[in-house]
Image (cartoon, rainbow, N blue to C red; front, side):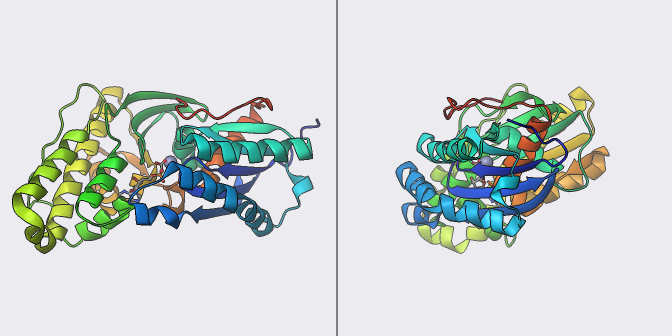
Length: 336
Ligand code: KG4
Ligand code: ZN
């Protein structure tokens, strides 16, 4: 098949969890980024994998069409189709993978598999200012908490990650315990802005190196709720959210500070759904001023799951001609 390296137009599909998303990128510039969030999970207090796969199946054609229409391109102008191969929920990944394979086959153009965690990091290359290599990225999402050394767009090394729950899970599970519903991160964030972060104390885990652990703090919140009772929790909800969130933020800031010092890197970035957290953004901005870091925080639309970041990663892979075979299948535990 002929490769067009003058005009690289890529359609990207993201379906790893509970967002069905499609984006079109033209020579590295985002033309569209459509995200359909699945509201069905709200009534279940968390993502139900079976329902997620079905919702992807129902939404994918509509979302892809919307991305193509908004980008004002024709399908025959596409250079490649990209998709999230993993990590994520198998059934959900299968929907995006199969759709992308069929689309690429139909148009006889290359297929590009993308690692979702790598894409979260590469979201930083969608808008200005872009980080300089090498930089450190704190990737914080619903399933991962990682400190990543980014040497070049496609060369990344995970220096440390969580031994148990991801920080996004620590937000979501706490919100569930506090009766705030799903997804919990944004809800705790909202209440936290109205509360006192020093009102209560929760334990900060001490983990070796650049590892994290968030299961202890989550359990301590459970004991706190059991000890004080529902009435107290309702009365002091804002202070509880602010204090709990502060504990998570302090844990993250300590580790990224340690990594920056030890590796002598002053280019720092955050990525993933939890990077939308207002408290974390502010805490890192304060730390960046103190440590004289150049800090890169993505636009809100590129923090949580979106196909724009998949498209950006695919642009880099297209330049390197890193294409996939039609035999490719999803990898729910795909490592960077
Ligand atoms: O990156 P993402 O959209 O999906 C995964 O790849 O997991 O991240 C979702 C996570 C959820 O745990 C959600 O609660 C959290 O990001 N999140 C937040 C905020 N917005 C989303 N956590 C804290 N504060 C927020 N504002
Ligand atoms: Zn994600």
